[in-house]
Length: 363
Image (cartoon, rainbow, N blue to C red; front, side, top):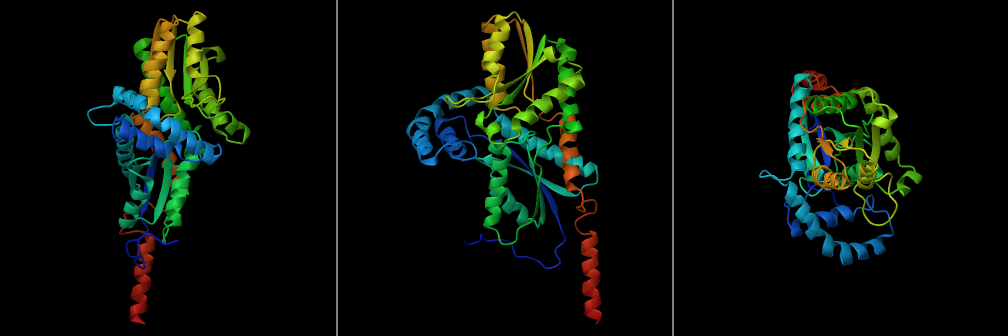
């Protein structure tokens, strides 16, 4: 396999560290062609859809990509902003704030963002980092809970890039931070802030993105990590078991997915007499289609139409200072052992190599 063209390697190059903050992705525009391109890439990933590939390609290109893009484009249009996709805007902002937070802690690292699907791609950002002389990369997913459908797929993209790269940077990966104290504290703080203005609901619904139920049977820890996040958040908020509910959203197809499902649960709650709920999505670090449209529009309508009176949506962490602190704490933990406290031109390694070269010249 031919290697991609790379910037020239410089002997004695000072180690330079970067953090690549990666999210799922978004179409470039809320249009049918753009959504079709995005869905074609996303749904072609065998980590995402684990059924025989030939059969799935026939379904995907013969049915799904013919009809779904137009419907999805209308949904994207309902949440699109003048500056573009909320997910892209939020991810870029988090990366910039993380860079600033780490700098305040004395960490001399570059922070860049990328998307698993669509632009800006993971390979393009890794190429750019190499061109900037980066020799060490920490890959930080925007997914707090690990899943093969998301986290592992992201890592696949990094490995695929590495397989075509001659001089591979030293790589580290953050698998998860679903139970990190700073992450739980950020979630709890966002809930308390919301309650300060509205009061407490009867039930706090914690809605996580769904995955096929068989992934749990195959050994994926996602289900367990979602429930641990929920339990820790409930404990931090002082909620009893009957004051919160864990659900899963965003089903695709007719196969059984992780249960209970979010919208049917909300409908059943309203029909049973629950008048007020708040919904938070602790598996999403930035607001996106699945939170802004599926939860704050569709799920809201379903609950109120079934007899509920008040539906509160608690936004994702987005650019909240506590969210940046949480990402920073996770990052610092995984940077351990890499000398990032000194500037790029004054690292201990650079000084020792300069001394060795000087000694050799004298001899």
